[in-house]
Image (cartoon, each protein chain N blue to C red):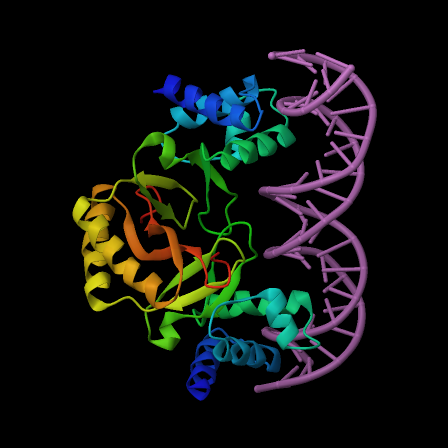
Length: 147
Length: 147
DNA sequence: GTATATGCAAATGTTTTGCAGCTGT
DNA sequence: ACAGCTGCAAAACATTTGCATATAC
C-alpha cells in the first residue's frame, strides 16, 4: 500500500516540479501507519528531527496535490491530517470525542452513504451550491470518556 | 422570538447566579438577526464598543448554558457562533464554502435526518461511542464562488 | 457590600513566514 | 548553477487570561 502512496505522491509532485523528499516520505509513512488522523505534534513525535516548519510546509505541499487532507475536528483541538480519499480509495467519516479529542474513522454503509448523497444533492441545488463533498461526523464520547 | 431567547437565557444564567448583561443581550440580538453563524469579529462590528475579551467570555458563558453554540467550519476560518438548537427548536446543518468561508444553514428533510440518525446510531454502537449529536455539512462553493 | 461583568493589555497555542544554508538534478 | 527543501527564529492569528475598575443585585 505504501508503495502506491509513494508512487502516486512522487508522480503528482513532479507535475509541479516538486520532489518527494525524505521528510515527505516519512510524513506519508506515519500517516499510512496510523489508524486515525494525526496532529502535527503527533507527526513530529513519530518523525524525530523534523522541524515544525517543515512539517507544516510539507503537509501543505502534499495537500495541494491532494495526497493528504486536513481534518477539522472540534475547534478546541489542533488540526489533524490523514491520507486523502484519492489515495486510500476509501470513503470515510469520523467519530469525534468531545471530551478527549480522539478521532476515529468509520466507513458508512452503502445504504447510509446513498441516502446522504441523494439528500445533500437536493440541499446543494436548493442553495445554489456546487457540492464538492460532505462531512458526516458523530460527535460524542469515546469508550474511555464515557462514564 | 427574541423575547423567548432573552427570557430563556436569563432563566438559565440565573441558575448559576450569572446575569443577562447588556453585552450578552446584544450578542443574542446579533445572533438572532443573522441568517447564518457569525465570527467574533463580525459580532464586534455589529456591537460597537464591545471588548474582544468580553465577546469571547460572554460567548463562553452563553455556551455553558447552551444558549449559543460554536460552529467549527473549515479550520482555515475563525470559529463562528449561532443560537443553539435548544433555543431555536430547529435542527439544522451547514453548507460551507471552501473558497470564501461563507456558512449557510439548511434544515434536513425528515427522510434524510431519519436515515442519518439510524445509520449513525449503528456506527456509534459499533465503535462504543456515546453519540451526543452529529454534523452533516456540505462542502463546496457558494453561488458567488462558482465559476 | 459582595459577587459578577467589563476593558485593557499581556500571555498562550497553533500555524505561517523570512531568511540563510543545504540538497538533489 | 539552479530550483526546491530544510532548520531556526520570528511573525501572525485567533483565543484565553490577569488584573484593576465598574456595575448589578
